[in-house]
Length: 450
Figure 1 (cartoon, rainbow, N blue to C red):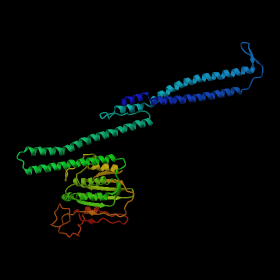
Figure 2: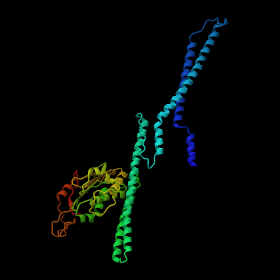
Figure 3: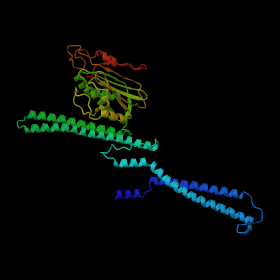
Figure 4: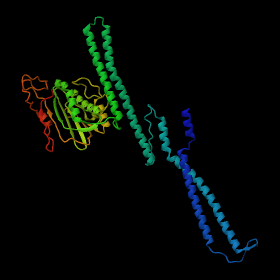
């Protein structure tokens, strides 16, 4: 009923074309009436100012004699009356022609709007390829049509991305569920299964459930970040990217030690105002990816810096070779670089979350493929209003075994060396260290992550 009433009101409402025609008609009739009035005043004034006849009589064609002054008044009245009648007829004719022309011109001018309307009505999930493709004059209407086509391009791309996301999310969630079901079915079907077999099954199910839970958490973070992109953040607080990076490195300590990675850091204050949990997740995802997509005994470097306008977080690693042309695709959901990983399997949402968090905070993220393999990702965010003056940084450089008591894969300090003796920096570590300008504190080698 509501839809019917809406359509009925739409039919009874005058169209834009009719309103434009009526407006042009009113303007045309008004201008014509003003011109006719001016002509009448000019003619009347001219005739009256031509002078009067002398007193006497005038003999008409029918031998009727009238006063000269009376004849003059009759002639003036007849002339002005004829001018008025013919002027009104001409005005009426011009108005009819003008209104018809205005109606035709308005229809032609509004044709792209009808194309927009008809295209919008035809649009659907399966017809997002419809476009206006206006080919008229390069004016405001053409700009509107081009803008509408560009909007449809963006909507079509968003729909395709959403389809891929849903399909990938379904696949990723189905995998751990299938693993759990298979393990349970196989174990339950074995009549000779003992406690050890059930424990093994429980371990597999727990790992799969943890993976599914982690994937759901990542999807929620991604949705939350994308929902706040372009809007005001629902939660804002001062935070430091350097602290987030340090916490992420500490959380990955065991994996770093297991892989024997050489870690170089230069964590200078990088204050921002934003959502602390999202920014912490941003730093954590970058460092987690840099560790998981790395070689055994590879390198990992993390730097934070700031100036008056912006702060930067740079995370790089050595790893599998990535074509620079494929780098933008790594920020899509469920895209993973490389076919092998030295760490546990991830969700494929790490860089997607990083990109969404950057957008939500008004920043940008860029990635550059490294020669020989690996990736360096740079996050740039607006700096907080007040930038701390004191800077602190460190270089954490694991060394190769220098004593028989140190294992080759360990990243910790040697057990036989005194605790106060720092490990000597390698060539790569020395290259990663930097000295702050303006007389700041220079980066110094410190013991490796423990």
